[in-house]
Length: 129
Image (cartoon, rainbow, N blue to C red; front, side):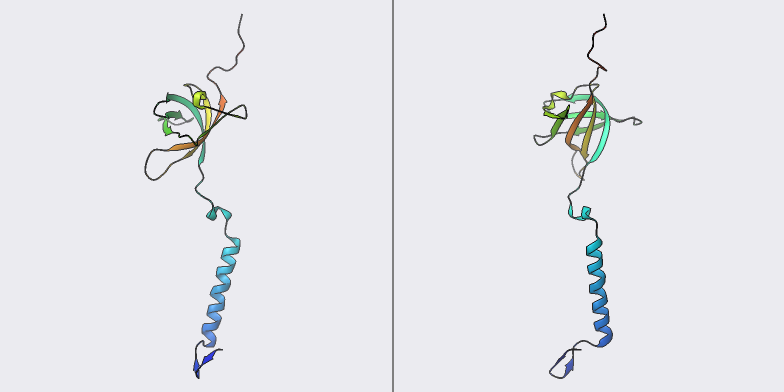
């Protein structure tokens, strides 16, 4: 118990409460998920590209089981991947099956940070004679 000029600053029950609160906060901080410290992560969506407007940098993705396509935009920081290599946005074409990492902000349209080509519109490149 502390005293300053003959006055009691902390009484014993208050001291116990203080230590209890500090202990609970320390436990909560030590077991908190690391995701609290990370920025918002995007959702992984798979679907078929319906329309592409390269000038406006937007496209429509139709997900399986959904009626309406998701319209999304991309910017210069968006990464496009095909065959485990970075490529340009030319991989986006109608009918291409892709996986996108999509972020939906509170304001504005959804945008993607990564587009991975899963398959092109043609199932294979072989010719039938």
